[in-house]
Image (cartoon, rainbow, N blue to C red; front, top):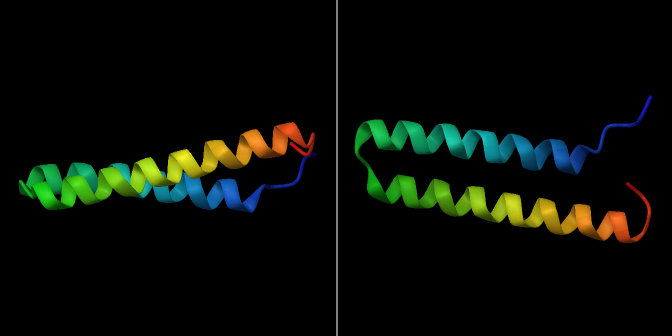
Length: 61
């Protein structure tokens, strides 16, 4: 059984919560909240993909 990659788990949780936040802000009609949640989502996803690429290069994934 493989070990859990905690940094990826945390990043995916942050991304999921930001998607939920966008839905809540959309229902509340808060455009600043939508933009903020979108920026958090993009940041988490980009950082996660960069980490994955780095680990694949080092053959640690």
